Image 1 (cartoon, one colour):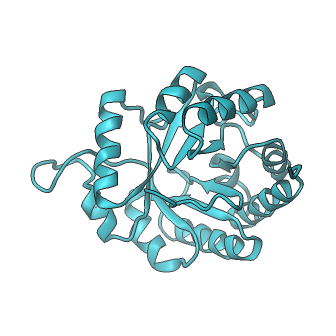
Image 2 (cartoon, rainbow, N blue to C red; image 1 turned 180 degrees about the vertical axis):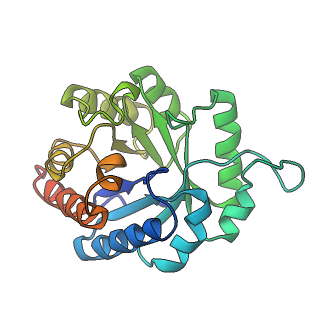
Length: 234
C-alpha cells in the first residue's frame, strides 16, 4: 500500500505473539501508542488476532498489524482469516511468512494481492539473502529481514547481514523499507542496529517476557529514536 509507512522516521515493531493475551496485550499497545507519539517513531503493533479489535479501539498513533491472513474471499473458509474482516476491524497491516508460520512463495504472492485489494499494508519476513531478494521483488511495504536461527536467541543479526540485506533490497526495490529483526533483546541492541543503517527493528519475547513489558517497549522505542538521530547525515 503506497506510502503506508513514513520514510522520514524510524520504525519499531512489537509482536507479543502468544506470550500475552487479553488485557495485557491492550495495555502493551497503549504504552507503545504513547511512546510512538512522544518519540516520533512509527510503531507497528502485531496484535494476536483475537485482541486486534480491542487494540484498534485503544490506540491512536500506532499501525495495528496481525500476524497472518489467507487469500480467500467471502464465502467458504471456516478456519481462514478473511482480509475484509481485518479491514472492518480497523487493522491496517498484515505480517506474512514469519518463521513460525511460513507459506510458499506462490501463496505469498496471492496473499499480498488480496491484501492490496482491500487496502492492507504488508510486512513480509525473509531469512536468507536469497529469500530477501525474492521477497523484495514482490514489493512489500516492509521487509522483515531476520535469520530464522537467531529468532528468540537474544543474539542480534551481525552488521554484515544488516548491510548485505539492506543492499539487496535497495538494488531490487529501493521503495521497500527494511526491518532488521531476530535477537533484539535490549534497548542498546535497538539503538545500535538503527544507528548502523537499519530503517527499522523490533522485538517480541524480550518485551513480552520482561518484568514490565510496557516499560521495556517504551525504552526500546526511545532507543530507536536515539539510534536514528545518531545516524550519519549525507
